[in-house]
Length: 369
Image (cartoon, rainbow, N blue to C red; front, side):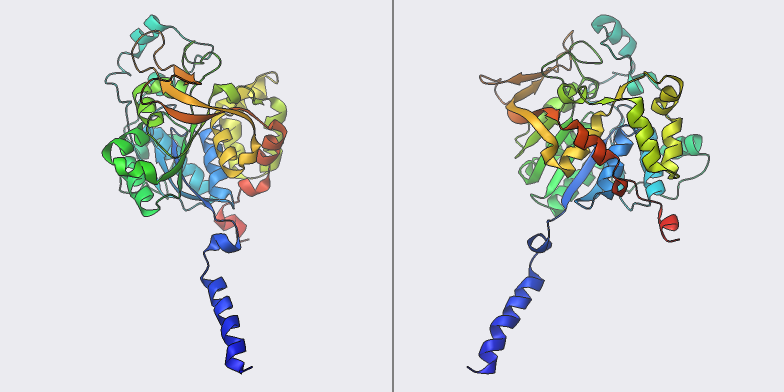
């Protein structure tokens, strides 16, 4: 047989292997946008750190908005934590207010009329708005940031990133959802281009926390949440209070994580948070890790051990049930979309995952020593 007839197939095979997409040789990374009302560490900051550090994920960007924190505070906290882990991830600032006008101005009256649930936390409704993200950063960290947000609104960042990566982007919507809602309203063409949306929000089979009817994220901006969950995305996965309040954060978990962090600068940040300070004073204190579950499930979907697929909707009409999330096995309201509602995760594997050192990278300057 002529030599060229032997070599040619081998060369072609090698060329095809080299030209094959990365996913053909190793699992392709999950491309993720984290849409968040960021706070320090638990829970949004931990969710971001895990995604930024995971070898299974390419964190395309962090989009911030008001919710648990004002967008200015959240942006400052996101930048600081990215600095501490040496992660080069773009941060885009988004919505400053929920879609319904004057929620902050009228919140006290609304609270009196609707009442509250078992959690007294009110997020930015009870916090003073910073002058700017720079002012928020200086106030919290005593210096100027070495990073800054990109010169693009979060809504446009989502639109442009999805269009540039069709059918590849997972949106981790761990805040009220306003950025995502406006993105699909401004550019409905991106809806079929989004791979999936994974939410932390809602409470379908138990009471809410902010009010007896509603969970905080979706109570903060029910109009936005309803736009999002009613969009016909390919896939929607929801981790609401139904699963989040089964994963209880105890002193033993706090101590274990501090041991994992060691001298990592985030250890000092954790001790300074409300959660850390409370655990230090009261060993019987318990908390939840809400948003961290979203990142964990994106990294390892097999953590889910129980779920149900139903149509979902949100009550966006002011009243006692404002912000309530609803699930329908059948005969759902017109326009409601199906979603996977997670009910249980493997908690032992989750805590082990949280304490895996790969999710707590050293700053670049220390890693080089």
